[in-house]
Length: 193
Image (cartoon, rainbow, N blue to C red; front, side, top):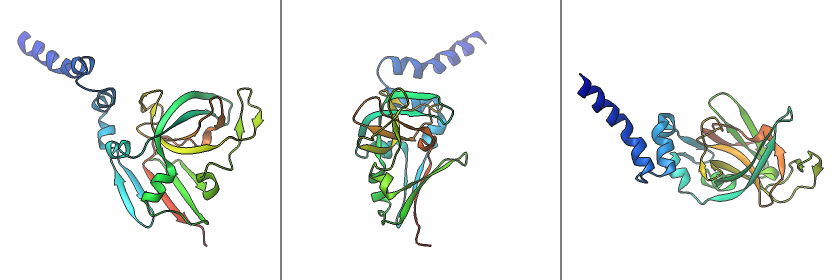
């Protein structure tokens, strides 16, 4: 009986030792320990509909920058080094947008955020400095972030993928309401009535 217990313990520890030995990278180790990440899918709906796995999302052109947000109650999250896919890239893969369209970002918990074409281009956001004083916005980008501070985005931080508003300048704070966690659907909708 003791031999079976020892064998089970050894088998349970193999993934841990493999990741420590470099046989699995950090991304694989994170996905290995969270089965929901392996099953995660992103659905893009527009004139075309496409579905991406996390690996397929990570294979798209990468966008990097500084991200920092503040909640409606004043709690700050960040600053982070963010990496993901530019939302404009994903919109183009779904067939693109017309001037009166909007992008609906949703998560399985029912949370939803809508970006217009101006915001998709990085404009129309309120930005703050470290003292939470409103400042003129530098160029911004909206990304679907899958990596934070060089590590795969954890579930608690909104992973496997969440919205982030990034800048090439550090210390730029945006409103956190738009930073949708656990994104699984991106839909382009027409606002033509």
